[in-house]
Image (cartoon, rainbow, N blue to C red; front, side, top):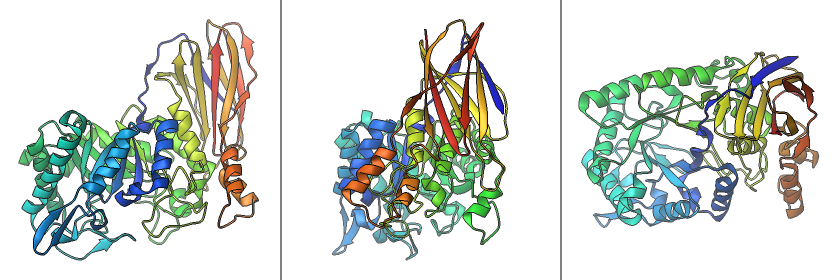
Length: 478
């Protein structure tokens, strides 16, 4: 049994919505698909996401830069189509400047199904010219005031050989040429890095920028609970089982200390780095997302979940409705439990209240929505093979005002569990319209009434919390 105490008569502290600053996608060409755009518009409406980040805006399939008949040919039309759409739905890009156009590449090394070139430029001056032309074009098209609201991030995970065939010094050179080219267009445009995996290179990166007088307006990096954990060849579940409970929170604390006062944006993170892992489709991922988003909200400026949709093809495009993809939505746009976790976060207020209490697997937060409503939030979560059980939880609430009523929205095995419903259908490889509609219905959040037990000076609320669950109780005050 767990108990958490909160006093509604005390002032809180600001709660920043780091969860909706940015969300991830696969690579740029996917954003030209109608279904991608439909799902992105839905995420904007229901999750409040404000930016999207994806790989490959410079890839050959985007046609950004080619050499034809010995002449440089620049084409920004496809990128414009994407950004026009984002701005039209009230979003903005978090621009990852990658990967290398073949016409500028120093080698033939590629990554992913879509054959992204990961070599340094053979001519850094020509790379800078491409960046300068591209950013100048966007300033001319959208206006400098608008583009100053964007973020420009240089490359993706250059500390991993799979994504960068140069050395650290080569990346720093790429960053220098890129950042200076962007600032040549307008000194107030925001550029940052090092966009590394596993929270790496940040002290070295900032030391280089300071010594070389290269601008770095923000720090960006990535992490997953499977980073640098377990042993080579371990399966994902085994890797996760070896992760300490608060591994990501501790890494965020370290990175914010290394950033030397610069804003920190995590432009990729998820419950694992495996693109085909069943837990991504289950309530497990929802509870993991919810807990970690709230735990880091006062430390970072953005915490970008990877990804918003299973319309994704780094290995190949899977047509299986639930295949353990990174997405918050399936390829059909069916909300997974993690999508509903994000939706609950998006409905929160902006004042966090102090909560007293502790439990090995249950975490609690209280957030004031407005003068008459407070949200009492719980998760019950642990990494695989760590101890976890169903828990009875009591909220002990001190308040001069009486509670008028309360309800709870849940995400757990029996609520919003679309993968389980698909399995009950017989796990069909392909869904018809009726099945899709049925899964949409299963995915919905529903408010259930909660009993309130008043006492002199406040009230108690009791909830039952199964493993890997979220319970979001909203209390209306009289």
